[in-house]
Image (tube, rainbow, N blue to C red; front, top):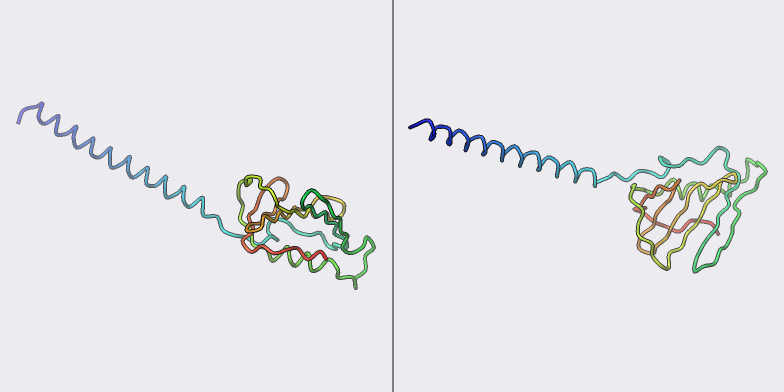
Length: 150
């Protein structure tokens, strides 16, 4: 075997090794990319906590271009007044997964919740899907249900 044949054989082996290395790196990137898409659902209490005591919650309900306001509880602290408890429990029972902002849809309803005069979160009901919005971050709700505001 002459020098040129030996050099060609070595280059062929190096190219095969490089192809295998590139394939391995691409496979690793794909696997890691898929793992990032599979985010775990968390309890809503991990993304927002109601202050203690929460004596009053104000809700603005938006549907078909109309707004309806609700006040739950009172500004005066009364240890026997548990009227905000159903809303707090409902929220804490939600299971959320962080997501990108979904495309806008017609016919959705939203509930904006205010605690101590400040925006706490928004619950957007899209029929088959629901989202919680907190400070501009979106969370898909895996167990949607209507807020107990009536």
